[in-house]
Image 1 (cartoon, helix red, strand yellow):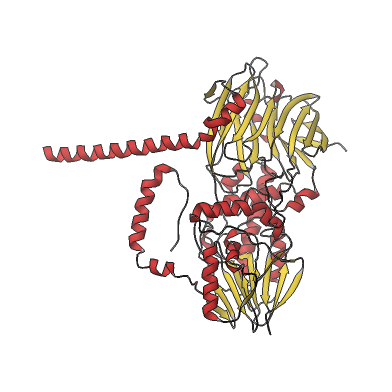
Image 2 (tube, rainbow over the protein chains, first blue to last red):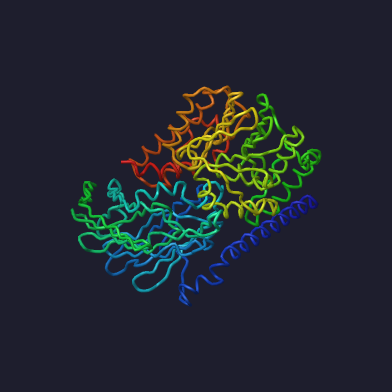
Length: 289
Length: 318
């Protein structure tokens, strides 16, 4: 009886030791993964400001990037955008990318919700992190680890020539079927889910010609401003880490018919502007020509 | 045997070592043949050979793609060279055992690393490299990344340079191997934006590259609309046999076009429906499944990537 108990105890101790070993290793891995961040990135962008890891924003990203050129990520805000308290900026980083800062995204109370959806290029196994700054200047972080896998679908265009042909073309869509669902989540009324799509190759400038050994120049969308009836609802400063043909999903709060203006500037100084008559209630969008 | 060198979280390392030890003991007998520098070549027609690929994930596994060899009176043409320099060397060694006729041409069917990272093994100065007009651009965009990934997985045996084509093909060129003509045809954007096929006129054997997949789930890295158009046109032509880029070393035509066409058609229909309904790529990736899963392997590895590629193309349709 006794010896049997001892045997069990021995086995359980063995399991506990194993578990501890695994847990320790897992923690060490996280620390190692975060080296780029703790070793310089954090200080470069935020100096000694305090960043709290909590649920003020929740970053969603796939664990494995099946197509490294098009990795969908989304950020969900845990608070509604009110005049008293709102998220004014979200920074998005892919630590191990050649240019870690994907972009800075600015929101206003007129955004309704500071949610954001976009697609990234992920160059290597890397932490992806969203840092939100509220209007009182506090910083909140959400982090995920993404494994870029495969290899065929390198973070480059599958057809660069085709991408150039329609450069600057835009699509603006209202995804109003979610308005009812949103109404329950947002204080002060429903917000409308919108999507802005921009035709642009968004090249990195890191692509070396195998014959000439020269690098192709970087060429990407660097600024996007969207306003509703003259009031800014979404602004983005972006890098080539945003996938080809950038697509942004965001919200805006006003529920009356109005005019949406989207202005896009790229690194070549090209400017593209589109104006749309939008009805958030019916979901109708008509481009003005 | 498959050489597995995936990068894994460290906590899995003890498990990996255990699995590795077990595999090593099981495969001790097989490892002698692994080390042999000569690849297996199977004859599919008179003077036409295929180095069979195995269904596996590029970089993680060796010998992923089907590679071709056509022997003329004066010249040998190699169609794709494999995923590493050592794979290319093993292919070259096998050709050397088969014939004294020298290799004069290497034709790359497209940019993917499982098809062309073996080029370096043939880069002797006597060999002319032939590729699609857009192959150099695609190599420029991806080459460094492919080499880096290959080095990560192979521990340094991958080869150190990409060998770009000296001759590029815009429409069609004929290559004379000595009493034997190969027709090399360039395609519009389909599987990639730089797909070539190679037809041996003498035996009616078409090397379809990755325009045709069997068993290995098709991988979309170009245009789903373009691929359906191009493979549809190919299916309307007569060939004695087709060598797919992945799958069995030869297959009947046009029957072999059926699975890839049906897969792409079903993927396109489902993706279009999803875009009309919502437009969220992540939900589409989680939702759209393979319509005839019993036909395909590597679904887990490639389906979501295919949905992303199809989605990014089709969302711009009016």
